[in-house]
Image 1 (tube, one colour):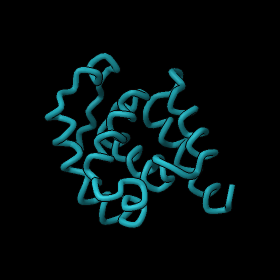
Image 2: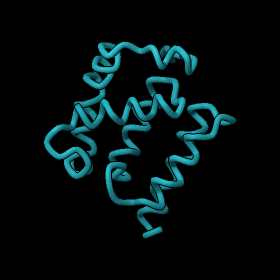
Image 3: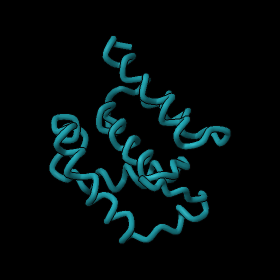
Length: 120
């Protein structure tokens, strides 16, 4: 497996076609595994919602395809369109940190799932 590493400046130049291709690759998996969550956050437009989620992840400096997919998974699970404001705020604070790389950001966000499940 090859992991693509891209600098933040390069991410800003990702073409619409590249983002669309990536969303097309992850959409079937995300919609299958997180069906109820995607319906809740995306309504009837899951690919458009995923595109916005990918673009938001890119804006936070998430730099690999694997971590972008993880970001979209978290966005679906935590309802990052509405709901779960405390978890969303915490996750976005982690994502905004320039001192952390993409994998570290994702590693710190994933445990928030347990907090949400416990009502935190």
